[in-house]
Length: 543
Image 1 (spheres, rainbow, N blue to C red):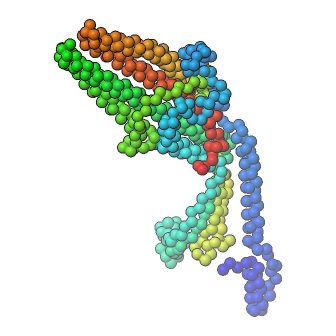
Image 2 (image 1 turned 180 degrees about the horizontal axis):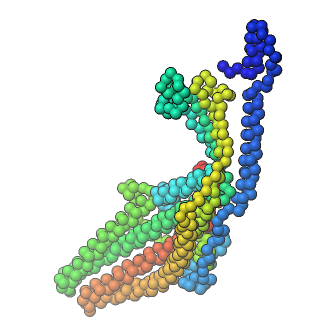
Image 3 (image 1 turned 180 degrees about the vertical axis):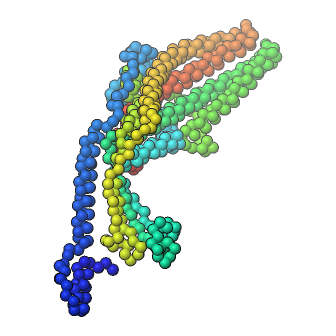
């Protein structure tokens, strides 16, 4: 039990009274605990004032964090796209200059094709595609890293309570022999150490290392958000391409079904001519060979259609075994695509936005590397309770504490920090080159698809004319064959020419539909750089 100084003085006076001896009276002295507590309060108050002063100084200094200021790298862009045709007063014009209220630049771009089946598939893909889900999880992980980096702004508090039974070695104290009865002169006992410490530390961000680390994580998360939208756009475009290629197979199937039916009628006509003695068996064999070849091609179309159907099932997150699309040879509507000017593309493509955020991230990493030139300052405090008796473990006299700053600075590192800064500067230059390459590739993709659409429209017009001519040629060849003027070989040649012309017409229309989708993808779909989450939204946890 703890005995105060006043109690010990009173006991001493009583002992004197009993013994009869008179000694000078002892004055009552102040409790030592009060003296020690007052000293502790002074020390703690002093350190608190020091830390408050350092905290205020920290906020003034963090406004001048070390590292280069970021500016978006400049890129050269033309005033207009070369392959964009001049506006014409025609209902078939598929391009227009982007306007702020264009519906295609807002929301779901595929709705402009006015195809309910495609709309349903795109909604399923947006909700269930596993590539999109993986990219979304990657963004959530990047956002969590931002919160991890921001935690460095605040102090950390840890505790490590323990109850340890121990006995020290006699040999540890052999240098303290006092000639006692034991060999070492010290009585060594087994005891239990009860300890409940608390440790706190805080690093003021004097040089902007933490600030730049947070910026690195924030820019990386924003790049991840843009990557998510790029994956989403890619999946949506791939789905639309597969859908229109499947519909092209439906159109081709309809064409070959009609062709097989026509060839069957031609075979029956040839057999009638042969039975009447008006033609040879050679003509019948030719008609039959032509029919069988067309039937084989008609059957073979099912392979490619099945593959497109399976690909669509995977894109919407469904097993191909449980998915099917009904046949539909409807010709899709072709929307007027708001193209805009090349400089606007920098704000409309998520891959460009991701590359630009990577440049900002690399720039902030230079600041982190340069902060290593300056000392690391830590403010530390520790305290708790310790005793060898469980009953006296958590009482006030069992307390212990320490408080003070620490500083760490590399005096010699053989050029390590300089090389590290050079490394990050080179990495920054690399991201700038990647960003500019991404922009150039985006310009190329827009020009490629504009050229494809313009030329394919001419191809379609020309092929339609060729198909009409081939149909007239077949009609004339059939009339002449029936009249006995020409052999059946002329009919076969005319039929083959018509089928080839019709196949090319279907192929050109499919390529035009695909180029339309690819142009929308090259222009960024319905995305805009303003949709990148801000730093404040990045810091929020998942809802």
